[in-house]
Image (cartoon, helix red, strand yellow):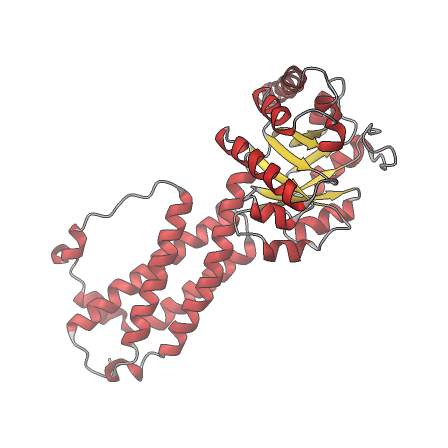
Length: 361
């Protein structure tokens, strides 16, 4: 050590060095193993290696002054975190606080020639950005994992005189996992009131609520996400404006569109029209083969859409769909709840059959 430092200062550096290394390693493993995000994992790893290397020049001195047995902080009771999101948040804050401590200590005459305060300040601000990205991915991942089974689109034009909230309630009782609101006719003020009503209904039943097209309504209604088309606002713009926990779905017809959607950060894609659609007579029919190709080409969930009914939904699920989106197969039926339940039963039957065939291999 070129300059003498008080033992207490070394103990503070040691404690915060450990917090930085341990906290960053936890975040790195979340990005690598849970989110499969190679870029974010590498960024966290590079930050960890750089900071640990910067502090490694004190290694021997730090170890000499370490005294965990008599550390009063070792007996401090720490509140337990309840979920992965809370753990990630706590570890990010832990590292940021540790960086700030060493940043301030680096301004002392004893340390300013050995450590650069600016390096730790820059690392702290870089981590603020990475923390936002990581927590956004975690929050969205929790919703994406619920994107399975039947996805019912409440299209007000198809419903006609039927009540939207009542239709959504019946679909949820029938087993729908996702409700999307699609309305091209109402004023934004009226649509917001309806969206808020459906959001409350969905959240009480732990059903995902998605708004079609309208970014402002999705934000104001605090929906779980938004679904956009190829001709809507660019995905990057929508992502930038949405709260960090909301997901984005994008309509696709081609493999190129599906790959581009994943590369630009879509959380899921719809692929279709799988069959001729009664609600979109001019829709391009892409068929089951396109669905199979998309499922092999991308890693995000694939939702099949277009002309899906009780008669063909099993075939759709067998072709790799993570979820199936329907409109007429539910809304145009006399008994919405019963129609939904029949579709869900077909999905569950196919899912069970797939699991059994997989376990027998």
